[in-house]
Image (tube, rainbow, N blue to C red):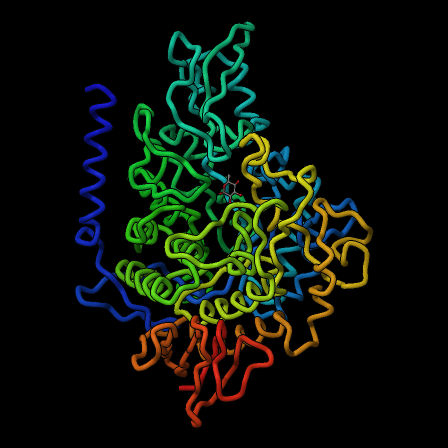
Length: 600
Ligand code: GLC
């Protein structure tokens, strides 16, 4: 059968499968508290042998280049992270997730890995990694690391060997090398890279002639692996074991929806727009074959868990997959533990959209017995204190980078809304991910000089997409120190905006109205009331533009009122306020863009 015909049939199959997914689902389980699972109608197995600490965990993302620099070279490193870990223990999170620190030419901030089993000298060495894990565990923090299985760096020994070997060789078969069309002159298909430009690059063969093309869904320096090759599967599983044996508590799986491509790599009509598109009909995303890989990974992770102990090793998918029910397939009981809820991240600060997104998210994850995750910021998107400083419109929000000549956000409104949105998120049942600096209310750096930009998106898009540097600017720790305490000297790999000084950790630590104090309070109340293990009920009788819900756990009930309207909401005299997102709040009222937690 011709590829195009097979592809058309596949598209129809997927459209139908999408609409019947709910019926194909596995039996569900309902979590009723740490260590106890109650079966829903139809029963089901416990998802994993351990006590499942991850179901309500708050996990803090550190982008190693930008958190803390111990040696003054302007780039953060592992010893710097280790030294600053007490900040996370004081904040009250459960785990830290480290973006890649592996040996890498750093063409994509380390998501281009040349050696999966070593630390890049920029960041330290394996001994520094072991010290970090020991310190984190000593502070009661778990450690999750990134795994990048979709592609390696072009500096990886396998890719070098592939370039030095002829077409059809075992070395080439680990990647997606193909002959070009039009007698080799044009790329094998019409796919475009997520960073702009074609997704194919032509190589020069060892004998000097123009040769085959290789696929790279991201930068040219990030060749995609061929996951139909068992050697690739074995190698990546071995990498997982390497880090599990070193004591990590889990992995965040980069581009988890991209590993398997549709057979024969057919042309696509899909226009790719930086990470956001619906993936339903794309031949390079969310192919059914990925699930079998993750079942195998789950068996591997479970083999490290300890029956009855809080020692599960977890797997979390970075999968930009819509709709939510397709994403939920990644977290069925025998697959991954979690996947990032990017649909929630992109939901505008509008009451109907928020309600619908939360309801849908809980239903889809609940249908497969998984906890939902919640996230508002990460190293790939505009920080939420800035996103929310723009007028809000129905539909998915803008997450692409901002430049000095773009419309600028309202920073005061953005921060007020960001605090209110975080107070909603941290009340929701499930697990939450925080991105470094959001606990300080850091805004996106929207006026970075273009010559300082390092995200490959900026160059590859021909200077039309600013890229992601604006959220990656190094952390301010001390308001009066050089580089705001990021390192011992002035150097910082991206310039820090002047407003970072007033937002430094030491300026906020003892200020009861600071964003840092708010995050600490939210995390403390969330933990003591075990809201992450709770059950959400929407409350009637409130104005349309107020999100009103109750979260009930075995230990307590908390009522959450988030005012997304323009008029203050009056609280009843009996209201017992646990905390408010605004400082100072107005007694007896919930102001516009404010969230309060009440004892129910
Ligand atoms: C993921 C990472 C992103 C990286 C890309 C390619 O989306 O989060 O930072 O550029 O994968 O590895």
